[in-house]
Image 1: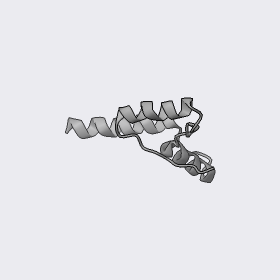
Image 2: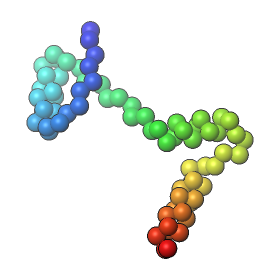
Image 3: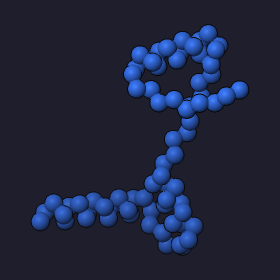
Image 4: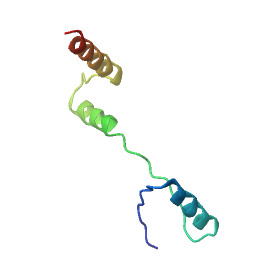
Length: 71
């Protein structure tokens, strides 16, 4: 068995792929999308006891954006 990763450019291609799967010529498996931000937070938290939570980071980003746009 050979596995390929395909990026669909035209929505019509998706229906063709579904038809191939319906004919049992191929199998479609969904990949779990990696969340790079979550992985980065996990990496930081391993190295620190007081790593900020996602909510704390979001608050900081919002405050920096607010300050930037007020100037």
